[in-house]
Length: 106
Image 1 (cartoon, helix red, strand yellow):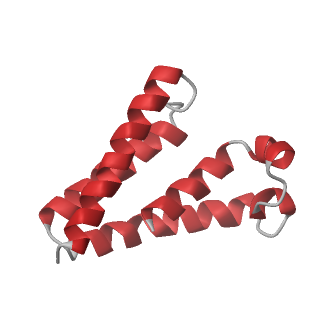
Image 2 (cartoon, rainbow, N blue to C red):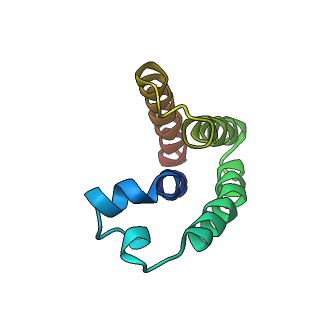
């Protein structure tokens, strides 16, 4: 669910790029509006956090970290510079892996 939210957020950032490079995606194909995608994205944030909280403090902390860093990446321009993009991507994947490991171990 975190990855779905991140991907929606990412695709909202530059719909024109997707219109050129990946026109079959839902936004450029017109199957969903940008506003609807944004609504789904923000609806998924508390849902992701709530599900993570069910698995304990570490899973919740990993989830919070993922949410904060994904906002840094998509909303605050972290994806625009090579160094920050690579660092944020690595840490974001780490957060996903920690959360998935905790869930799989239960």
